[in-house]
Image (cartoon, rainbow, N blue to C red; front, side, top):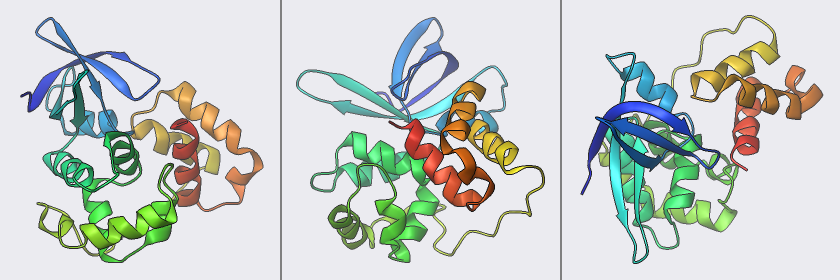
Length: 204
């Protein structure tokens, strides 16, 4: 089983896949949104990144899922252990909430945060809260208290949203497309809500 890969991203697909070149061998890996940006922020080498990998074996395929941290990988494994939660929904959840934030959301029973994620309905959100409440607490480095408020933003809302999306690993063109799709709401809605809606648009 493959547990970790370190290399250079040579391709980025439209369906959340990347090709990681590791000493001349290209591995196709599915990653949650924002993984590349966070992995690049962690990497000591500007040319390469490290992904913590879960190897998912099916009868017809061997699939690799990559994460910026061990905690995100551990959360993915907990999620796919829940009935009717497959890798696709688990990736969608971790695209919206990193492991620590997911643990905090579960601890506070914030089902509305979960139902905002594409593919997660009310019943699924309630089941996640019920089944994860004692499992994610044990994840290393998973904060259970609310995250500190972000610093006061400066600049136009469009620029802030664009910057937030590119820092999460999106290409500038993708960020521009999401900002344009949100239209006039960009200047009136809260930034957190805009980021959530932009992520939903980009995951379609």
